[in-house]
Image (tube, rainbow, N blue to C red; front, top):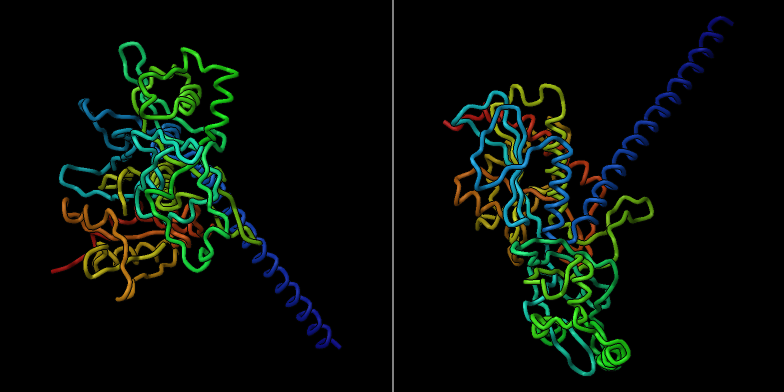
Length: 431
């Protein structure tokens, strides 16, 4: 009887222990899923605030200032101090932020993560005014290696920067029109019977957004004349007056004060969580704002802990370039990527320390591959470089796709890189 009782008690205890473990495991998984989604939602906010490289840099500046980073100017004398944090911009489309380690001395190393703020898109030409077949249109040029067929039948708007003459000064003002003012329509199926078998648009003749109809333009102009304020005499040969007036209104300026502009076409649909379990992110500009976000937040967070910089012998740097068109380790023997056995080994060591899994990528022999900033930096600056990116589907489409987990993994890996690279590097022996 005693044995039976003990056995029963043991059995009950065992069941409770298993159930408790499962509840704990379930709770831990739920907390991890919640953390993944929170990080993903913050990334989505970053994406939606960055419709152009200029907006991306502005959002980076806002986050860096909030974390105590001091802005520097390229043409000023810098007085850098250990355990202090700084950032500097160039052309308002590139940004570099860095934190000086407390143990840094002249001749020590740098821990650098690079990315780029631009993405493949359509950009408004300097002379964009155009009309054909009764439509007012906007001439654009293809920027980067986009999948241009995905830009058809999308609600499009404009974002970028506008240069304003304000008194004797030239000012930059950011623009992001909040309404769908442009669209590139397909022909009806009966006018292109083979569209489902092959679709190869002529980029000069077919990829032209529609702004309005000529008839409606005439009707509106007749009933409500544009007037002197919107006559746009300085620009009417370069851009449709109606569009210029709208841009002027959005940036709170008179049309005749607009001196120039750099504008991207932007999909109106915002970035969002997707999939039945919300495990995906559907968004434009994942290439390369994914890396920008992970690197930015990793640098900020890696410096927040008490004494985080005190013993660091390096300078921690993130640098986001414009005009780059160009987690997975990417290899290419022809040096389209800059990964080597040495740099891959260092990254594998760091990834193991922070428990982040790595994949590997090498393109097929019968397939081409893109390029990155890696080979450029390695060749020009002599830096040891590893090419790394977050895996995506629909890359260079108007809307791309990635996993929410890749955001958390990228952030964790980059944070681990800033924390552990000096130690790992000091143990490297190549003699």
